[in-house]
Image (tube, rainbow, N blue to C red; front, side, top):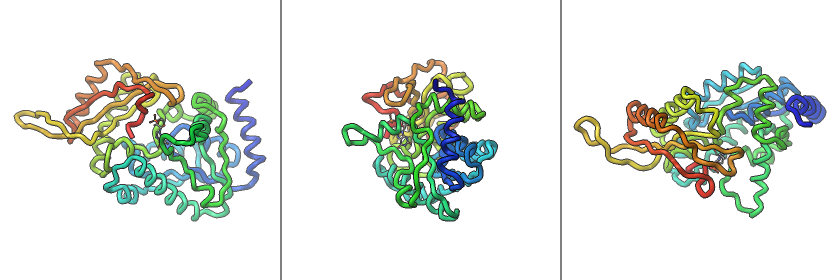
Length: 315
Ligand code: XMP
């Protein structure tokens, strides 16, 4: 029978056998999958694992600092790289979703590659690929709906072999393995977050000012969701900055400002999803807080579309 404990035991044995004294590099994203992969590899090969955590400037508010601290706390050998300026520069003026994904994906590989070359004798690339990723990339029709940005392209470029210990697991199993490994709950229960981050939640072109607005709005939304005890009931949630200004009124003044959309879905694997029936009182509170506190936003809307035909992300 599959249990997290037996999975960990057999996987650590396999990893030790497979990797021996080889060195492994792994990109951490802050998400559950890459984090659990790192802790498993760390258990098997210790200091022969080096982790890279890139700040592309499209993470949630304070996410980079907080998660880096969590990783250090877990005893991981992790290098944090601030590459915000590079990404903002390369994304300036780009509006097409897949083009944004490609730029972010490639920028990520550039940064990772540069860090990897500072290290010596790396033989393996660790990846937090899980079973649904494998299925989705097999793509029966031969068309990919969205180019999911893992670190595809890297292994060939760097001549690395792939090690993907979670390849056969579903998300809930990954979480159970994480708990068994003694990882903190808030790391394990964290909602999925796309690799391109807020880059695909700012519809249209990306500027540092738009990132700031969205980070503030998203932070209010997610903090209240935790406070109201809703976070763990939701598969995934986040705010989206729409490329739409609309008229509002503040005091005697007419405003013409941005719209933020709130998204929250329930799901078991992200292949299908229902919009979450969040309480009206909660939505009212979030809307008030965002409109009152986030400069540049005068309207908040709630997305009531399910997948399919809508996707979870808006880009
Ligand atoms: P969609 O929007 O296709 O999202 O319903 C399904 C799940 O995948 C995540 N997602 C991504 N993850 N890179 C990622 O790493 C991406 O480009 C990307 N696009 C969507 C999304 O957050 C959801 O969990």
